[in-house]
Image 1: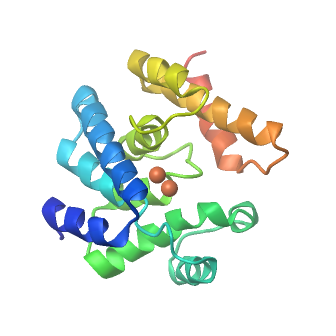
Image 2: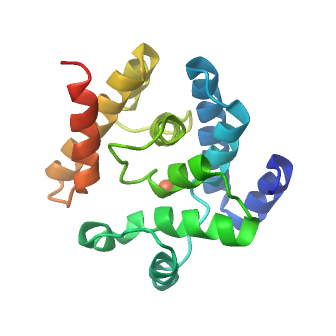
Length: 189
Ligand SMILES: [Fe+2]
Ligand SMILES: [Fe+2]
């Protein structure tokens, strides 16, 4: 499997400066959360670096890669092309970089829509993508504070923010986001 150093030089070449900076931010934040939660820090760092691997490819290519992958991509996900870099990226890192770790693959695949059953590594990358230090939007500070209290309040706050954001704009909400929120809310009752 490709090593962290190789991934960093690859992304530097492949990404715009902003996307490169974001990916490094997600990697560092995921590493920090992995340390806190007792998970594999190196895996979290690599997953963070790779999570947006397919971002920037054109829509037709993303759809083609999605079809080639064995991921179940439903009608709601297909209707939101900005989400397709997740399943396409999970496929591409296996094909192009030889990444085989199932937790990293799962984290990339679900970093956009989430999943109520995703594992701990996928959960921290989902969180890191939302709160990494370069992120600056209304609600991010509150989300950072909730993540400091724990993974459960962090996930509830992030999914709630995403659902509210999309409702306010009359946009589709992927059902997984709701299922993820419900699954974590049930843990608190
Ligand atoms: Fe992404
Ligand atoms: Fe991202």
